Image (tube, rainbow, N blue to C red; front, side, top):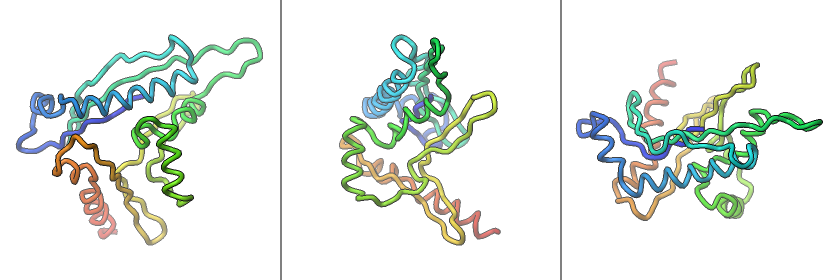
Length: 193
């Protein structure tokens, strides 16, 4: 798994990996990433077992087309079945990791209890879930649905995250919601149909 927490949008002020390193190597960004890493390690440990989960890359900054992203790589090795035990599959790993810690925060169990009470059975649809595939070899690739535009029949919906950490300033809080760009890009694409 590749938990991604800590994003710097490319701009005139943030053009290089060195610029992104200066911006993202702060306690708030690293703490958010480490919190999710801890949740992912715990989720994988439940399926893989002791000594079978590792972190080969911690707090690595990677460059993408429009952003720099702080990622950590967490790997787990599934145990071999013993006797009549069933073999674990990608679906078992997926099931153990849902809901994604990047959406719940920590502590995950308590966060989910609070969300159930606050949302009172309202459905989120696909927002804050995952989308992906499992191929015929059992390999899979999944992505958490954040800042996505969804089209249902003739209506569009954009789920937005609204969490604000106490340590971030007002500008970052507003930017963290991040739906404006998704909505404008999506609306433009739909208007060209």
